[in-house]
Amino acid sequence: MTAEQIAELIRQGLPDAEVTVRGDDGAHFEAEVVSAEFAGKGIVQQHRMVYATLGERMGGEIHALALKTRVAQA
Image (tube, rainbow, N blue to C red; front, top):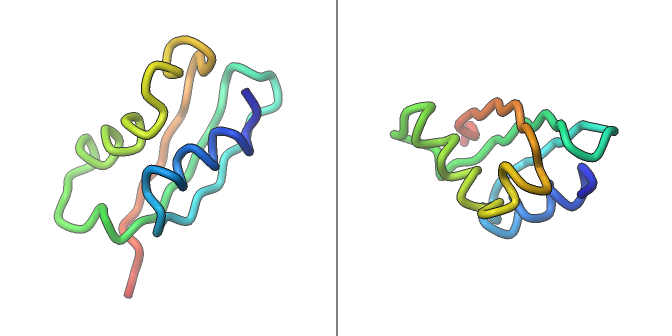
């Protein structure tokens, strides 16, 4: 899995999101996701939304994902 593939999966699940993913070892990644869909949701809920876009790949193809989420400003 590449950083760009992960970013694309997140964008597919959260179409309005601004997504930046870094990681060059193919297993450990860092992502920053900014989305208006996060409004009114706590950090745990926001992270769950992102993890849901990656499905079974988490813990498999993606060994670790350090995640930062923010609500997009209007």
